[in-house]
Length: 301
Image 1 (tube, helix red, strand yellow):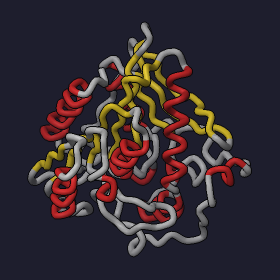
Image 2: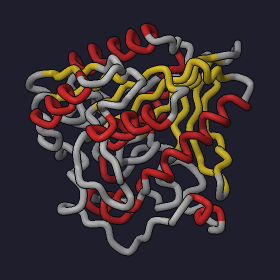
Image 3: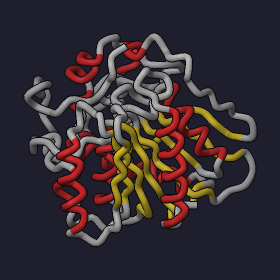
């Protein structure tokens, strides 16, 4: 199986047949729901599934799909939290290009076992269902390349509001983590929402062209970032060159967020994806511990 990763934008997957709404109010006039439910398994494009796949049970948890009210309807999300208690710190879990499939749902359960309300909203709900697509490039061209950052920020705001109104989540202890496509979103949302206490970005793209859909990249907001973000990257990531990671490090030093970046040598993209051959158990376990420590250090616990 190939090492799946999100390519750089534009030149490799040009944006076609889509116009960004002039503002989010334009979206409210559209009736949608392309995706109304989450996939029960793994997205077809990632099959066959590796033997190392981790399956976290739901014992002691409340776990399953919920609906998040957004400006133009509702989107599905996977939520997991302890079965007893309340006032749980909240962690937004942001998907790879493969959507909120079994792996992301398992990540939510792992976090719930640690005492969090973890929630992964389906960020591609309006653009299409990636779970039934069999080719990575098809996922990118038909769905991922058409998702506006503005839409993502608004849907995450709605997810935070849902968590607060649920009566179970404490959004004064709000964290965010994401993988690949979602890693980039971690940087951007940490800049967008001042309520975020800390973020952890797993191998998210840092540089790229400014477009109507993606006007800013993480490196553009690094100097002004206020929220501490931990970046976790692979030294052998063919999609995210080390020089771009080092450039991000240098720009972060000019700001005051306290953000840090860890690079694991000889480690590929997707090293936490236990369902793919890119999985690296040692590095993934170390990064998972670093994530927990980071959230505790900055009050997301």
